[in-house]
Image (cartoon, rainbow, N blue to C red; front, side, top):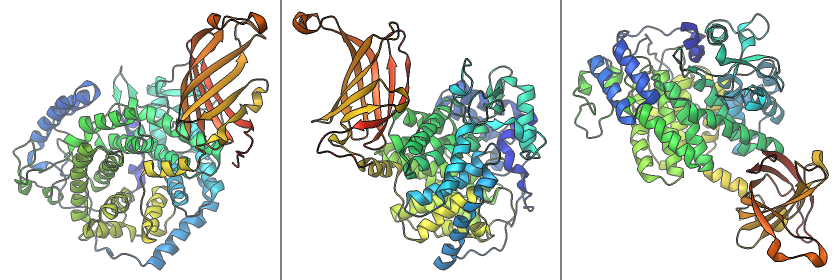
Length: 611
C-alpha cells in the first residue's frame, strides 16, 4: 500500500532539501481519525461536511497550521531579472532541445509530468506565434495519446477510469524504460496488490502491455489521487495542442484527448492531499474556459468547495484571526504561515506543493473571469492573490535553497500568476517577480525538459511583451478562421466507406440541413435516408435526425403517408471547410452510435473551399 500511495509522489526522489529551523511532523492532517474523516467527507460528503472535517483537524494542529513536514532552507540567491537578451538565449536552448526530445520522451510510454509538460511549453509557444519543432511536439503528443485509457483499449471491459493517461508496467521492469525508486515501486505495487487497477491494452502502439489506469478502489479502500499529477499536465497540454496545431486531423485528435481527460477529472473524487486535487482543478478550469461547458464548471466548483477552498488559511475580514478558527496568524509557529494564504496541512505547506495549489487557484479564477462568472471570479481571485502573496513573501526575500526538492514547480506558479493574472490586471507584484527569479536563476532557465520548458515558454512570451489570452478567446479566434458561410455546403463522405455519405447545406439564420444516405442494418441493401436540422455556429452543428418512410415513388406518392420516425442525434464538428467529424447516436436498435472522419467530396459552385 505504501508503494502504491507513492505513485503520486514520483518526483519526491529528485533530491533532498537543506535544513530549515522548524519542522512539524506530528498531526500532518490532524489526528489519524481526523485525517480519515477528511478523506471520507471528500469521498461522499457535502462541502459543509468537508469544511467541518478540515476545521476539526485544523483545530488540532493549532499553532502548527501551515508548518511543513520536511526541512528546507533559504539561500542568498540572485533575485534580479535576467536581461531580455539572456531570456531570448535561454529560450533558444529550449527550442534547440527539440531535436533530441523524441529520443528522450518517445522511447518509452510517456508520463504527463515529463513529455507532457515539455510539450506543453512547445505548444504554448506555437499557439502564441513562436516556433518550435512540430515533429518533436507531434511525436511526444502521439506517445501520450497511446497511453490514454479508453474503452477501445480494452473491448468488452468497462472502462471505469476512462480518459486517464495510464502508467505502463514496463516502467517497473528491468530494461531501458525502467524507472528506479518510487516510480517503478508504485507501478509494480499497483499491478500486484490491486490488479483491478492494472489492465492490458488490446489496441494501439502499446497493445499487449499492462498499464495502471486508476488510483481509486472502494474495497479494499485505496484513495490515493496521485494519478491526477501526471494526468493534468497531459490534459492541459492537449488543450494547447488542439489550439496550436495546424493539422486539422491532429487537432481533432488532441481535442478528443483533452475532453476524455476531462471525463477522468470529473469522475476522480477529491482527496485530502490537496495538491493532487488541485491538478484536477487546473485541468477543469482550462476545460471550462476553453469549451464553456457547464459540466466542467460544476466539476470545478465541486472540487473547489470540497477540497481547496477550506484548505487555505484566510483572513477575509482583516482581523488577524484565521477565518473559521480562533487562532491568530501572529501566533503561528511557522513564519511562512503568518501571512494569510498558506495551505493548512504539513504536507501542502511545503513551498513546492503550496505552489501547485496556488497556480490551480489562479487558473480557476481565470476561467470564471473568462466565462463572465463574476461571483466565482471574485471569490477565487481573493484566494489566488493571497496564496501567491504568501509564496512571494516567503521566497521573494532570499529565495529557496539550491537543489530543493520540487523547486521547479515554484517558478511555474510564479510565471503563471505574473503572465496570466498580474500583467492582465495591471497588478504590481514585485515579490512574485523576485520569487520567480530566485529559483529560475538557479539554472532552470537554461535547463530544457519537463515542466522547466513549460515555465520557460511563459517567461519568454512575457519578456517579448506578448499578452496572455484566455482559452475562450483563442478558441474563438481559431474558430473564426473556419467558414461560417456556405463553403461547408456540399457532398461529404468517409473515404473508407465509399458508397454512403452526407449532403450538407448551411442556410440563413445560423441553421444547417444534413441528409445522411446510408443503409438499413437489419435489411442488407435497403437504402435509408436520415434528415437532421439544427443550429450551426460556424464550427459545429448538432441536430435531431428523423428516418422517413411510409409512401411510394411516382404517381403513388402520398404526402399524408410520410412517417418521420425519430432516429437519434447527429453532430458535425468542422476543423476546416474540407474536414469534419461526424458523431451519431441512434435510439433505434441496430444503428448504435459512433464517429466518422469526413472530407468534402464536392462543394457549392461559387463558394470554393480552400482548406
